[in-house]
Length: 173
Image 1 (tube, helix red, strand yellow):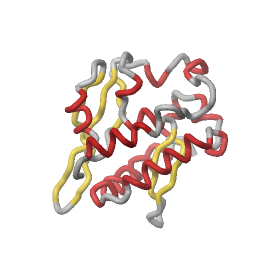
Image 2 (cartoon, helix red, strand yellow):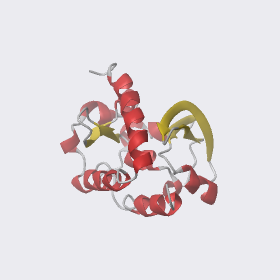
Image 3 (cartoon, helix red, strand yellow):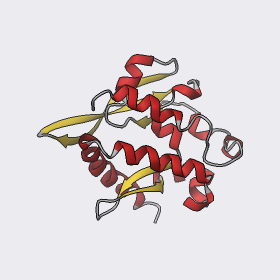
Image 4 (spheres, helix red, strand yellow):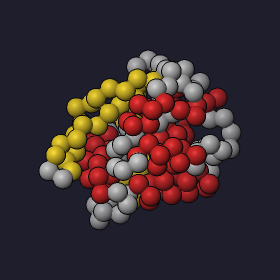
């Protein structure tokens, strides 16, 4: 992804002033998604470049066993692992949009859904519908991934990622 770090840094700005709900949702669950304990969020294609530039305290990047194919090559997905103390403005995109996530439907269209992986820790992911989230937040999530989907490598990643999400969704239907 050409100029990936620049693209992600611009996308991050969409989430500087919007959050999933108009209240501090961390009060509902005692900030369960920011506890650290070696928990992590998958990085989207090219996003690892941001962390090479920023080298933020409290976050380390590790490789996962997830791979996707693009242009005949296998690409390994990275994970940003948090110790619970990261700077809010240096979080990866997956943290900024939690508990929502992008998803490719069976017909190949991009959707924004409540992340089934969040249902085990996030009261909002368990109890709310997409329309219950702040409208500006949902629009910005949609805007970010509409832009990212213009990149062919990102599209290849999303096919694998959506199948991965489907595996988690089986436990919460």
